[in-house]
Image 1 (cartoon, one colour):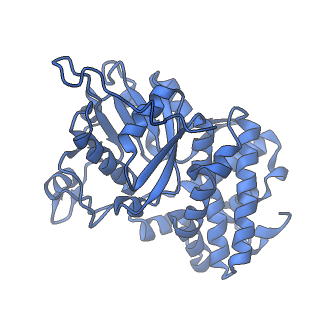
Image 2 (cartoon, one colour; image 1 turned 90 degrees about the vertical axis):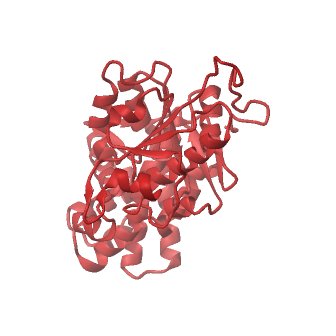
Length: 365
């Protein structure tokens, strides 16, 4: 499970100096804090690297900002996304666009980073004839899974099937604001081929954002989804005022459940993704100490407010991925008759949705 990309096979554009120059064009679908942070890196790289069209477009769901005007105009004029990533300067070649079809026009590299609740209408637009370039590739930075009875699907697999294009997965210990401030970190990209590895490495790798591509799309995608459920358990621990010993135990148990779940239901994945890469243990640690799922789970215990209320009050309207994933995973395991082997996932759901006392989190672990 070594990284695909080495110093010998990085992306090299063809005919870069000729009239038939082949240029990759990046489009980012999503403009929340994480989408904006990724768009910033992609735009900085596109402006500097050969073989890339300099303009990077970012899809922004249009809205009126009271007293300031339309959000897209505000982003393009101030070069800041004050709603979701305040006080971070954005490159001038990053352009906010309100129409999805306009964002992806002629794009060859499409980054999907919308809350998974909104993916279906996005795919409906993208799948219409003539919307996508025939040579387009996608990457998913969406955290979550989709469940239908006793079947479970990762978002890269859904995107790939619906759009008919290869789709990679990006995940790691990446708090959006820290990434946007160029604090050193790593990310993992699960890819279906060496060509995808080289392309996405070129889009995102930077001195303070090191990219490690590996051949495990399912593992990277699942780790990004399941770690949010474990982070909720960590937040419950914090909400009860318990200490580091308890939280460490919950993280260890949670990591084991994450790896066991992925290997059982996605056997093509690798256990090394969880132990050796940023998308695994590193992402779990970061999310369980600094992420929004941990933060809201702590407030859930302390205040007794619903997660819907807390999204509004603490997240400026952004959606919690852990709550939705906990529900999906619970119902999937219930349909498979496997809840007894994943007690932490079971408890997180029951505390969140069935009024179970948070103190019951530790039973049968």
